[in-house]
Amino acid sequence: MSAARPPEGARTAGQLAEGSYSIRIYVPCDSAALAVGADEVAEALQRSAATRGQNIEIVRNGSRGLFWLEPLVEVVTPQGRVAYGPVDVADVDGLLDAGLLQGALHALSHGLTEQMPWLQQQERVTFARMGITDPLSLADYEAHGGLVGLRRALELTTADVVQQVLDSGLRGRGGAAFPAGIKWKTVAGAQAAQKYVCCNADEGDSGTYSDRMVMEGDPFMLVEGMAIAGIATGATQGYVYVRSEYPHAIATLNEAIARARAAGWLGANILGSGRAFDLEVRKAAGAYVCGEETAMLESLEGKRGIVRAKPPLPALQGLFGQPTLIHNVITLASVPLILAKGADFYRDFGMGRSRGTLPIQLAGNIKHGGLVEKAFGVTLRELVEGFGGGTASGRPVKAIQVGGPLGAYVPPEHWDLPLDYEAYAAVGAVVGHGGIVVHDDTADMAKLARYAMEFCAIESCGKCTPCRIGSTRGVEVIDRITGGNAQTRPQQVTLQNQKLQQVALLRDLCDTMVHGSLCAMGGMTPFPVLSALDHYPEDFGLAAPARRAA
Image 1 (tube, rainbow, N blue to C red):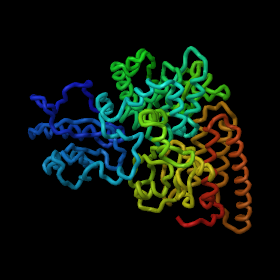
Image 2 (image 1 turned 135 degrees about the vertical axis):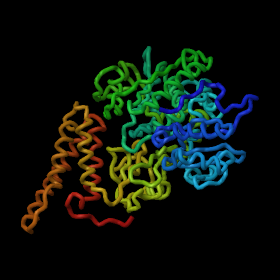
Image 3 (image 1 turned 60 degrees about the horizontal axis):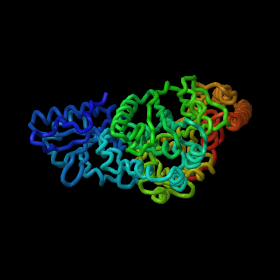
Image 4 (image 1 turned 60 degrees about the vertical axis):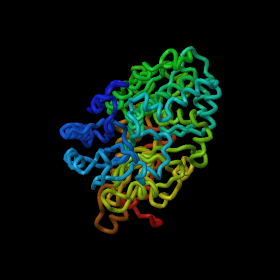
């Protein structure tokens, strides 16, 4: 568990008796940092400094996103914050001896944090505060630009707030990429005594963690975004549906909501405006399919998470049958900045119909995994080779899966394609939630394709036949394609014919799943399967295609 936080405004252990502050050190409380010993490092720093008579104030900030350097310890100096990492408990005494508190040189030093190339080459827009502030400090949040968007929203008409979101070009960051402003306009125009705003934080895709980072590292940004959404649409109650595997995010969100309510940012009279909006956190039960919006609504209502048929759309008949605005964390977290700086500021980032920035998450077999926020238009090669430093194994990259476990495997010939919703759709790929999982040349793409089908079979809610039965049959067909090897030429010819028949069957099955499934669970499972089959047929025992060099 992360270290306990003092109440807002309380004097910290490092505050001197005469009222001045000691040297401030930042140690992340993000789950990724906790997993590699951040709590223990913070305790060791406090203990060793006290032994030496050195006064320090430890602030538990969110992660900057440089996960290969966690725990990343930063010390405040007159020149700025100096970074050290990855820091282990065993390194603490040596760092203090070398002059950590003065920002001195050390083998673990990376210089001024803001000058680190990884951060300098990004466009930190939504994640501008991430790793800089204390996640639960109201004062920190306001000092770094927070609450400006909410105050502006309260000054505008609801129609003007909706128009700002429309004009920004913001699209759903959960994967569907539907224009956010259209949803807002639909819910705002619906006539009902009660409306809701629901944040789907059931972030279950492999290689994704940007939602978790927001909830743990800058939760007031999500609170503010949801409050603005409530004001614009006429909703007075919001729910954040968080996956049960995120205990730290749930605890931080609950505390943030309580502090925001006490400060008048939420409740019956938001910032004295007479407008009402309140929030609650709801813990999910571990079903991947509840990442789909209507299955999430079923779960919020206390039912089994099963996908609903559409229409009716949730924007008109959603939670408890009432008009409901549903977005994921990053979509709602993008809203405060849009209101604070204007639609034009946000729209100036990106390309085509993909406006703004995307928090991209690098994972899998990669040397420097972590979060990179870039404007749309960056390429996979820039991300994986530039920011990621190539594979952790040192072997060549073979395939890159983009968009979670239901995203396509992108082959080398598309690594220079700009990251853009339409450009990716044109080659049968998806941007999705911005999760990128890298595989080196030892990966067996046939096994990965089988895993996608098996994953769907396990996680399907079971409501529609194409998903429930199609995924099970898909596993069987892939097993028939990859099983057995003939020894003589006549047998090889027969085997190849059998393989081709099974490949045709697999493609037909995938077509049925894409066009017949109720939701993206079954509709997108064929993406990784078909991309593996199309671009890496040799892994299925089929003839390899001619491929442009990476």
